[in-house]
Length: 445
Image 1 (cartoon, rainbow, N blue to C red):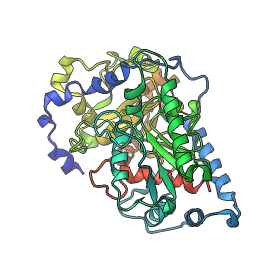
Image 2: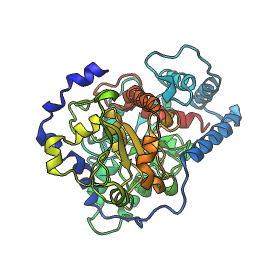
Image 3: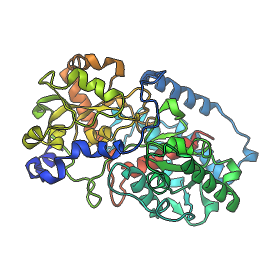
């Protein structure tokens, strides 16, 4: 609400907390060596094509008719849930949900309800800290850490007896895997992949569950850029919840889960400074500030940095600018927040924009947006092809004011699904991630 946003006085933001925010999350990435060639992708899958692929996947899954005699009881429960989801038709939408931001709000409601009623998850206890069971709750990799903490502590979904489980969670941190095993500047990640292989072989030998389904009812949650490389070969059958949701490096639309990348500055209060100005008070057309790593951001800066007063496009936010209006204040005061890819397709700025109620403008070919299987991103974001950067201002100005108001309302309504809570609440980020994993498993059956 506007009253809530107003109560969080931007003038109270301590300069020490925000003056480097525009650069901090980029600096974390740029200390690492770049493994990919750094150029534009050789092929592009536009959002319309992604929607088509997902629709085809859903239709194909809906027509599958497995032989019930071969299914175990927990698999029959999932198959029964699938039937109920496909036949969902409700005119009574939960007042907490905003239908336009969903592909099919009735289907989502029914699936979410069945998840709450049915789903049981076994969390493997094997593995030593810090790679296992040590969640990181601050910084760029907080999504995997918060999920780990809340999943391991869940009394509703987590079960002690694996025989009761529908899904099996492998609780490792892709960030700690890099930190513990990667030798800086070695350009060699073989040890990371070998570690994942050894872990998979250990749980397959110790427990009967992996071999029972070849890992299709197992999942992991990983936000490090390298997670696809580390896991593709040995955990390929598993459900992969990845921040680096790039279709060109094996992300499977419908099967895998696009994990929101959340940059958390205050672990004790992840909702601090949430909200922003109402649409009528957002007098900046577009804003971006950050480092220029990757091939795309230099293109953005070449065309728009210091070129147009309506387009507040910076590299690193100059201190002279930050003294007048810091990074967070810019996001709270802008209509559109530009979210270009860096080294990889994902960017924490997407969730950050939603957090500050700024319409995200995603510029990242082949990026599958978070919760793609349930959310209608066209209702609360603008997706721009990389080749259209020179025309960026015209694209934004061509959006009618009425449409902008609808997009910004969508941002405010969808925001609840991108928030972490120390004690999970209905429809929040923890539940949305778990629901997407559940939804993936249901439609594999």
